[in-house]
Amino acid sequence: MIRKNPNGDLPVIHPSAYVDQTAIVCGKVFIGENVFIGPYVVIRADEVDAKGEMEPIIIGANSNIQDGVVIHSKAGGLVRVGEYSSIAHRSIVHGPCVLGDRVFLGFNSVVFNCTIGSNSVIRHNSVVENCHVPESFHIPSTTNVHNDEDLARIPRVSADITSFSESVAITNLELVKGYKKLSNEF
Image 1 (cartoon, rainbow, N blue to C red):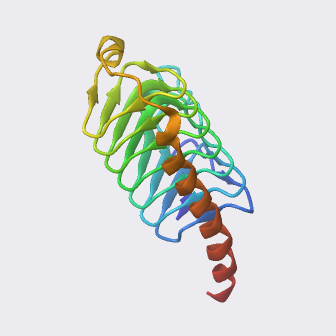
Image 2: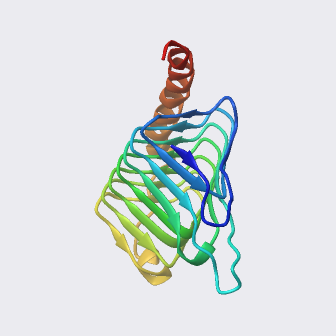
Image 3: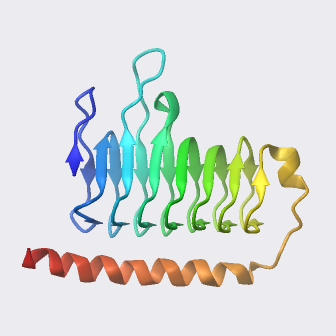
């Protein structure tokens, strides 16, 4: 369901993107080329700050937002998901939050009030908040990061971990094409 927020902002969705009919996209949302928005996703840009203003939620080209993901923002803060990023099943991205390009956010993970550098991987069931994750950083599954000091204690791993993220992005780009073809059948 595509709908306006109380301010009257309507999502802007690139024609090449696929938005599942069970998803809810509301308000000041911009969805780029070839983006996959899976079943039961909720993307809501509807809260305002103290001045009655809000920044958008932006989903960059070729990214995929998988089943059951929630993207929202506190008090109208910016949420930006970079290009070729994957937000896996049932994750929560709560703004203000900026994710760089080619970021992988694993199943059931939560990010809030943070910046995630490009090419970073946050594995499954992790919580990352109130910090600045550098580029090409890997956060292992079930890790809780509540500030930059917690982040500094995580050991660095090799870049080989990004191959999984890349395969997820490529698979979902193919899904966009397939579902766009099927949409003509309904």
